[in-house]
Image (tube, rainbow, N blue to C red; front, side):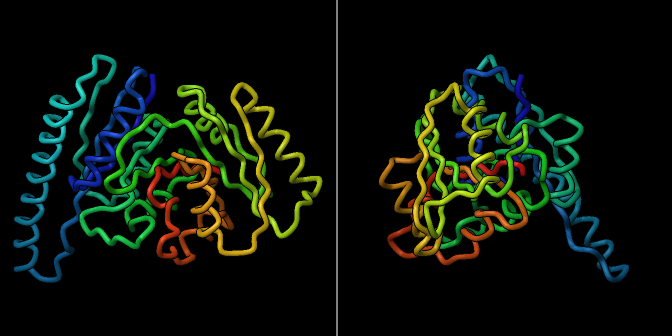
Length: 278
């Protein structure tokens, strides 16, 4: 039994991410926790306090109505006897609630859209998704791009600097998806030269041994340009359908989202992003 958390703001992107998750785990016995949070403004006067109480009540009503409509959508488009659903409407900050639910419900994956209602086309990851990624250290996050049409994952690239050994949680999450769909895993290492030090060789061996049941291909490419551009070209050339990155304080993830996405070289922003715990 898998436990999947689906944060939603009821945007089109959120519905798309929910649909992706339901398809990805359609053959697995799964409980989906559908979460919506709301936080009306903090009052600064008695008048504002009364207004805020009304606003809070309206926000709660809208939240519960949105969750009810989400369940109706699922029943119409993704009916599955292997799946069960629990809705959570919470007056709290999104990241606080996500962290609490991960612990209390033993969540295996968080699946979210990359963008929300405020949708900027040139933004790689929206603010809410980035806050979730930064807040979570022990659970994988799968971020689904806007308008991405579900297809079975077959080619996954794990971009890693090999400077840190992957924890068991990260390896298990990656192995679960690769075994579920018999994926090929491309290990991509960007380096100024082709030489790995002893620590990187050791981490690579651990990674290869753990993923041994699946097909693994190693690619060491020179880091002659920004990582976004290299990843975009690589994902396009190898028909990659999922980009996996490991979260740590100096991760590829931070480098990629801080670098500008070049026009015409943004293929990696159009496929699902799997962020693995460090």
